[in-house]
Image (cartoon, rainbow, N blue to C red; front, side, top):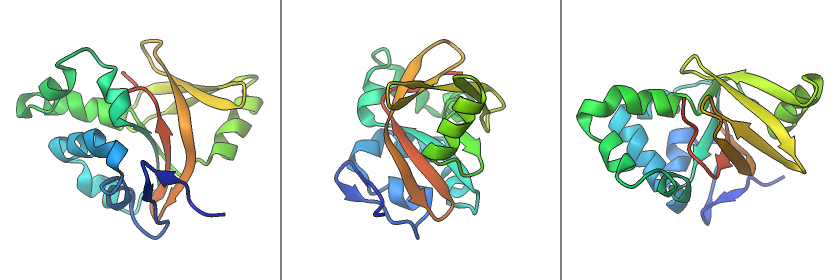
Amino acid sequence: MANPIVGGAAMYPAKTIAENASTAPNLTTLVAAVKAAGLVETLASPGPFTVFAPTNAAFEKLPEGTVPTLLKPENKATLTKILTYHVVAGKLTANDIISAIKAGGGKASLTTVAGEKITARMSGKSVVITDAKGGQSAVTTVDVIQSNGVVHVIDSVLLP
């Protein structure tokens, strides 16, 4: 099975999460944030990681001025916490997540690299992630396989 295309860009399973994300036109805000937080090396390391990657449109849903404020050097710690809240250690495919949801009686709690929980559940045939504040994000593209994990593209930014 071929890897999904993200934002019109091919995603190569032999490349790292950092390498692939940097070529996706709809992930430029995420890539800029990862660079500002100094997390590029982490997302290029062996991992494996499961990344829930918000699109540019997801970042645009945040209150006006949020992204430029987060990208300032003095907000690096907050930005890092938000970004690592989108990462789970290990490689969880959509089937792994759906199996965990079924085993959990309709929801699965996942611990992020930030040390906080996100909850996955099904909504129809889609996986929906709920953050600590009750915000919800639908997974729009699943199983973008990388050399160091897997990316699932989401439509909203998760907030710890």
